[in-house]
Figure 1 (cartoon, rainbow over the protein chains, first blue to last red):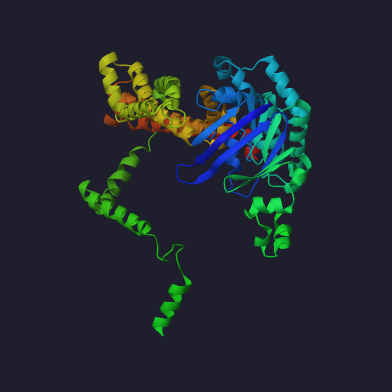
Figure 2: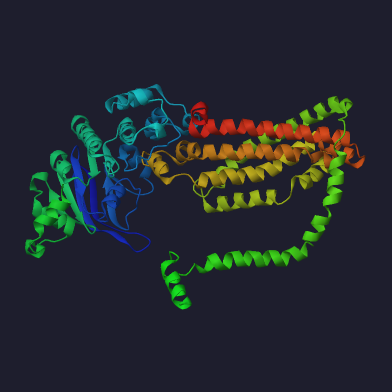
Length: 263
Length: 281
């Protein structure tokens, strides 16, 4: 069953910049989907459309049988977790409170105004922290953690929410390769064990090949590749990163490009 | 020879603008300010000579303060100082309770709609437009003499300032953390509570401590119009040339303000950096 249906969606920002152009896409439940493409190709916009952080200018996005619109926004967001490039934790709160904030959507406003959480919330948060191996830092202020730890706290926040899907907007772009790999491995394990759909923007082709079930390649706001990572050959990568479909256009310096571009 | 030197000089040194010349605003801005000052100085009869010539009477006056303090005045001074501190704390506490919700409504990113935002912003500036003493006069004529009108006057003005400061500390919070809470389905109030308030809090505590400092000094002159506190004694001693009392009053206000300042430095460190000891070492 498809958890996300994107029907002929375009997005133009108020400053006239066109980010996405007639995108049609459907994502199956439980998959690990990687979105790749050069900077400025619309990856982030595509991810942010899926929980309404960015409204579409044209077309419609349906998440878990709910159309993304103002009326359904909170309902959708309560089923969709998100992991950010810059972690987006609240620095002044401790890790536990940050993780618990993933469960705000299921709580009445009154107890949450007093920073009161239900016992089941603590159970879920503790379990999430255990899974990301950050239980020892539960009562530390978020800004005292290292980048990798902060991102694991971010994953724990999404996990504590018990979502159907996790969106990850360049989750490893601010981390070193080893720690970044750990985060992606964690997301993969979450998708495999809990059946949570994961949609992630990634720049590391090697990781995409290893972990993704499906790869979507964007170039200039259009989908230029959609398939399993085994089909992600050099020609496909060129189509994605240079927008060149014909290999003859590469003028023989293809290997040099490749050596630089796809570590 | 001179010409070539000039030429090399201009070619070596250059401003980081497209034309290489300093930006127009950076030249005209300060010039305009100086011009404005020159024009307005005349209006307020500003004169260096007059200030220099007034040095002598000023020193004469200050010499009057070199007297033995009037220790008999101490008990009365202490009660009045205590009253001043009470006015300050009570007024600030009342204002805190009122300006907390007003500040949220007056912050562009937390306000439910532009209309409410504009109305609260304007309300706060209307309150601020009259100084404490004028509000005190209003409340004295309504409530009679004593510390109560002082508390009310100070509380009203403080709402105007505190609401504005609080709104401004909310408006500068980081977008990222706000989005982090939003993306997980929290409602409006929860987003404000869990991402905006924690981020705004250190800044707000800083403003609060400054306001406390300011209010202590404001409460010290409220007595001028009969609104309680040490102000009445200060003015009366001034008028009766009781310098042995003035020196005591000035010293005690100085001590209080300094004490508050020390306390606020510690508190701020603790709140901004999490732990006081870590930050101070």
